[in-house]
Amino acid sequence: MAGRTMDAGLHLLDRQLIDCDGRLAGKVDDLELEPPEGGGPPTVTAILAGPGALSRRIGGRFGAWLEAIANRLRDGDDQKPARVSFGVVKRVGSAIELSVPRADLETNRLEAWTRDHLIGKLPGAGDAPD
Amino acid sequence: MKRLFSVALGILTAIGGFVDIGDIVANSETGARFGMSLAWVVVVGVIGICLFAEMAGRVATVSGRAVFDLVRERLGARVALVNLVASFFITFLTLAAEIGGVALAIELATSVNYLLWAPLVAVLVWLVIWRVKFDIMENAFGLAGLALIVAAVALWKLHPDWGGLLHGATHPVVPQGEGHPSWWFFAIALLGAAMTPYEVFFFSSGAVEEGWSRADLITNRMNVYIGFPLGGLLSLVLMASATLFLEPGGIEPGHLSQVALPTVLVLGKLGLAVLLVGFFAATFGAALETGLSCGYSIAQYFGFQWGKFVRPAEAPRFHLVTLVSVVAGAGLVLTTLDPITVTEYSIVLSAAALPLTYFPILVVANDPDYMGDKVNSRFTNALGSVYLLLLVVVAVVTIPLMILTKAGS
Image (cartoon, rainbow over all chains, first blue to last red; front, side, top):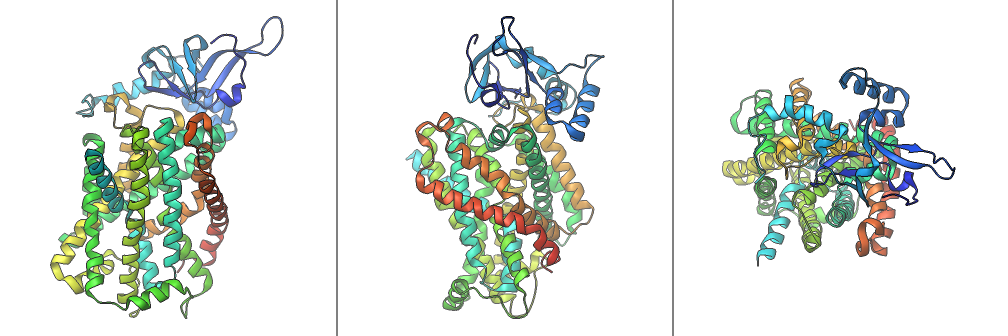
């Protein structure tokens, strides 16, 4: 996906992330940008997803509240929002398709925790839908 | 042949699925107080829900994206969050009202207080969401909801003065002793009941759940254009029954049993039994829809995996939200807050929130990036814009009118 110029606010922000198996893997809550050395428009280096990234965009009291929860839920002192390197982006359409499974993403931590500690423990959680 | 069957099934399901506790309460109360003078609002509401449900179903079918997904993308993180908080709150209130409605229907059949049934109903609702296949769930309760047609049979057997009812509907005047503000307040409640936002959350997410493709667009049209109006007709039957039976006596249906009164008087115990099956199915089906919609809206805003088309363990946060919502809904009923009152508030607040949901649908249904050649026709856009304008006006006046009329009392 290197070298394409686009309006990141319009074509990336708030879009759905879909992993290589077609599973939903969060939203593009924010972007990590880097100015190129020679000047010119900045390059998108990563997608930031999850409550940590979202809270900063929402701002205000609710944003601060959301960020506090996000920090509380995270292990250790790592206060950075979950990051998806832009290198794993396969296609940008009405959704952002990734070339890796969501289990490999940092953004999947809360989903995995909920599965392992709550929903996965209920009888029938692993049964196929039909 | 198979397609014909699925289209017919879809239509029948849509009829039974259209009516929920909000429609039952709003139509009966209006009939009892204002006769048929607000029947036109049901027509306006049904056309509105047809217009936007068809759009939402078409968008979901063509792009694979359900309504709240679009809300987030079109309105941005902040405005969509305000929308999420409002929509979730209203959908949750409706869920509580439906759980209360199911419990009241069982109370009518068993004479055991509804508060004892509410926890059991919540457990059943969650079990169905957790275990039953999506299409079986939708069809079973939609079809059983058709039992409400018994109310139409009762009305027919009464040989009512059809001309008088029609005249009342086509010549709307505020009855003597009632003020204009109350009349308009009930008009808004009827509109909110017919166009509740959860219907499009559920309808569009359902299209994704069932894996609709372009070949299903015809099913989408038929469900909406035939099923919903017939469901609306069923609402009008309840209004007409209330007009004939309750209005002359000045009875206001504060309880489900009064809604059932006309059917009992005409068709006896058997009629009541069939009607109760209809009440149960309609409210239980709507409890499933609102419970799922609580999960759909939150998951689609945050981008979690959602839906019953994957194993529950693959959509853990979605299932956690539905589970917590159903439990909390039963909790709200157990506070002994009157379910009918909860219903009234849920439909009026729905009316106030309608533009938040319907604006993004109208925008995306015109975006060729999502829709290709299936964008809205000019006619649909013109009608959609008129409705949006109407919904904005309704949204602005609802809360002041609610305060002014003390919620219509």
